[in-house]
Length: 65
Image 1 (cartoon, rainbow, N blue to C red):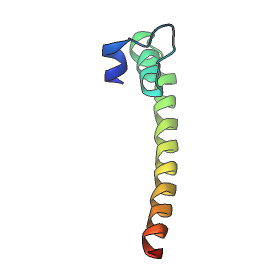
Image 2: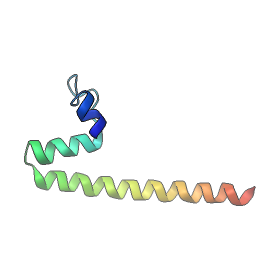
Image 3: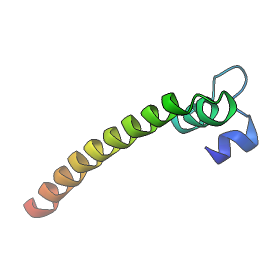
Image 4: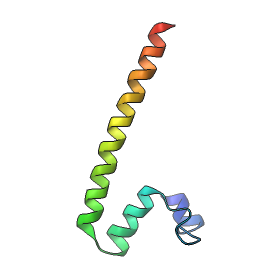
């Protein structure tokens, strides 16, 4: 989020917006705290699920070798 904010502020338009930067905009610029909290929680759940799958796949690959 910090690199996008410092370099382009999400511009031009919304071309370089990341999900964390979008959550920042909704929560702190537009004061939609409930929506930003929901997005953050959803992002957290998606990351936990995807990282768990990646860890299991990598563990299986390491055991086979």
